Image (cartoon, rainbow, N blue to C red):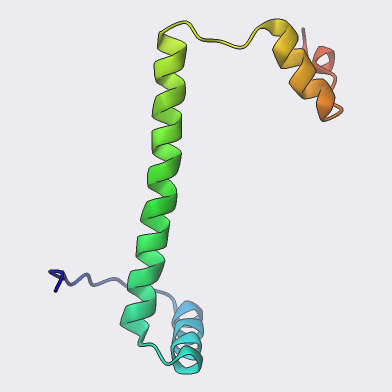
Length: 86
């Protein structure tokens, strides 16, 4: 079995009520739901951090989008980049 660590945290009363309600409705404990929420949060943030690091690596190696590519992407979304002081 995987080793477990205990974490203690304070949450506001409304959040706790919702946590308790979800636990009751799902047949889980508050602790199980909190652990799952923390795991999901960490996975999500880890992915974001890795994507940022990769972007920095690419920028450091000179891999930038061309001006035409940037214009094309913004144009696709209906954004006129000339409005922003260019």
